[in-house]
Length: 304
Image 1 (cartoon, one colour):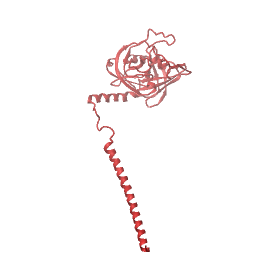
Image 2 (tube, rainbow, N blue to C red):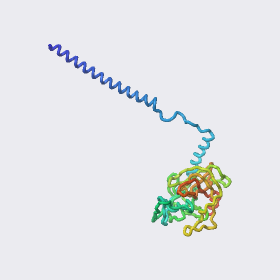
Image 3 (cartoon, rainbow, N blue to C red):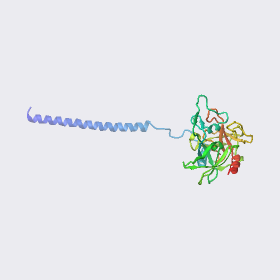
Image 4 (tube, helix red, strand yellow):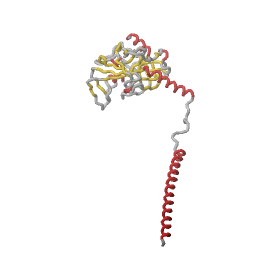
């Protein structure tokens, strides 16, 4: 082979290698483009999360009712507060809950079988309250604050601001108490006794289990209930003959921490103060009890 033929052979080999390289690069580019397009088409065509339209549109009347619950929740929540109470008394707790919560369940409630009681050197109880005047008067249950240390009551509003509360007065015979915090606030609208009817919708607002501004709904199940928990002396378990009970019964979910919170009607008016539940388990069983607004109004005016 002469030198000219050898040079041409080397050039042909170089050209072939270059063409192969270009082909490989082009193939990779095409495959990448194809794969990308294929993946996009796969997701675009075959994977569509959710249906295109709601499967069952609510009738206008149902939507109006739903919207009303939303409006009530928005309107009444600012008037309901969370209350924290420090006491000097040793508190027996079940699952970490202060002793004051036990009264919330009625006289037959105790530590469930198998649960150990824990004695705390200083108890911290809790509950809820409702602002009833724009200048800061708050109504709650007597059993929420009755063992409070001096300066041991703290009120937290829905905007997470905390206020030291003064105990204005309390009435063990109705299980109501009034606190005072300084400032200007959104007060609840108080209903009339005639506004409360068996079977009507109600909304319970409070801080069950420490969950602030929790809203649950139900109906008025009964009126005029007496369950024998108000006015009972904890030392001898004797109940005063002057104790007054006339509870509204509701199936709205109520749990420890709801004590002193509000029960509102569908118009957003306060119809009662949540006070107790009937339960052997320690949690909501569908039987909640609230002090009716006419009794609340009368006692609050006396205490203020």
